[in-house]
Image 1 (cartoon, rainbow, N blue to C red):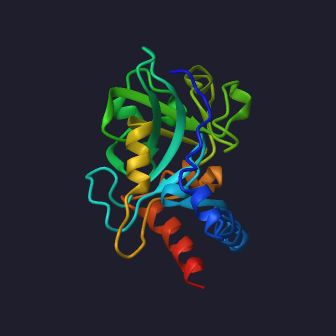
Image 2: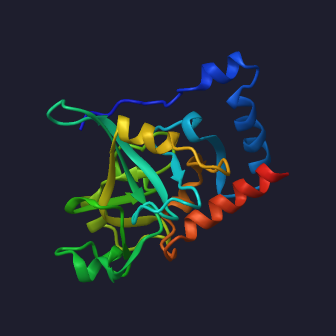
Length: 229
C-alpha cells in the first residue's frame, strides 16, 4: 500500500468564518496536556480531528462497534490500495490483548519476544502478524514522527534480549476507507462527545500490560478532565 499523508480538515473553514477556530481548542488542551507524561499533543475532536501516521484515535463513550468500543487505535499506515481502487487508513487497537504469547502463536518466533502477549489489532487482515517497536537501529522506517517503527523481524531474531515495553506484536488490524473514517469522525452525539486524535509517547503505544480498554481510559480521562477545566 502506497503511503501518503492525509489530514481531515472538513468544517475547519466553516468554524473559522463563524469566529471560532478549532486550532485554538487544540492548542489550549495541548498546552495543558504537557503535564501528562504520556501525551505529546491533542490533535482535535470529531470532524476537526487531524489523522496522520503515528496518531492515536480514541473512541467516544457511546461507540458500540464491537472492536471500536472503548478503543485506542494507533494509525500506522495510510495510502492507496494496491489496486488503486481506494485510499485506505490502517490502525492497531492498542488495548485488546489475547490470551496467547508470541511463542505460543508464531512459528520461528524471535526468542527475545516469545513471552510477549499478542494483541488483536482489529478485524481485518486474516492472520497477519505486525511488529511495532522503538529500536531505531533495526533499520526500518519510522511511523510518522511517533518514535515507533514497524517490522524488523530479522533484527528481532538476532537480538538476545529487548527492554520491557520496547516491542509489541499484533495480529490483524483495523481498516477504513477515507469516506468511512470521515463518517466515523463526523458522527454527532447529543452530548457533543466524538472521536479524538492524540500524539502520545512511544512507550504508551508499546505498553504490553494493557487489559481491554486500559489505554482508552487513560487517554480519554486525561483529555476529558482538561476539557472540563
